Image 1: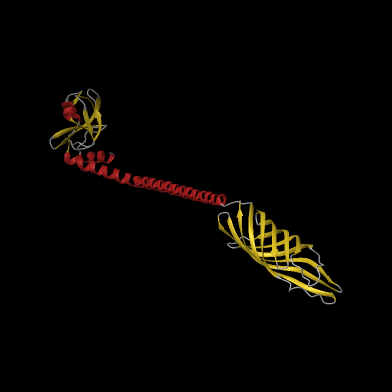
Image 2: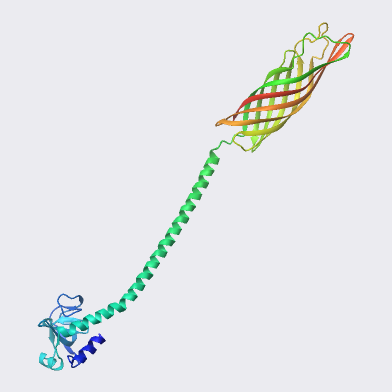
Length: 334
């Protein structure tokens, strides 16, 4: 606005800076320019007072310039006479005021643009920062949810796995025994050759604690001439693998009972014998379905049975010293 005033003073169109009081005849629009098409910047209510600075004639139509903007002359009533007002004011034509107004608006725009640009950049940076912060928070939340879900799934899978602590089972074996006859006096003639191989069946009950399996076993071995009855404990250690291998030891008691007379002409023999039994075993087990599992194993057990046969004057000892077995079994856990 200072540039406009300075320009008008140079051209001689502005003669005085005195103002005159005026009253609004009715509600009047105050505009940014002396034009009916210009922006309305305020409204002057009827009978309100306002200072008129000068009269501006635009295309033959007078406008009053006030401190708030331009008002059409017909909407204001000067408190002093118009003639006295015109004596103190010179009329500024449209050609004179328009370039000054345009220059002022250009300068205002140039001054405002950098500030607006800076403000826009700051706003954009703040928006981007908030969006980045929101994205980071969402990523952290998603990762936390995924980790929590994975833990829950792992826990569910762990909880869903059967925790069977006890089991029962049955096992079929093929056994090879070490059977020998040693003559002490003379030569004992046996009814038939001693049997050293046979099948057997064993029954077991047990419990599992982590990787350790403890079972009580009862086994019956039926040979042609003798029967063996064994009751023993087995302790196995299982390895955590798909096909679960295991190693173990066994300890118990075994009884041997003759079923046929081994001599031709004498029945003199020990009818029933007992022996400590101990051994080792190794095998593989597999979880077949839910609480059913199958396994196979090899075992070696040391026994010490000695039967003394007497046929006067001859005498001999028959020994059953050890047993090697291969077997398969099935277990039901509960």
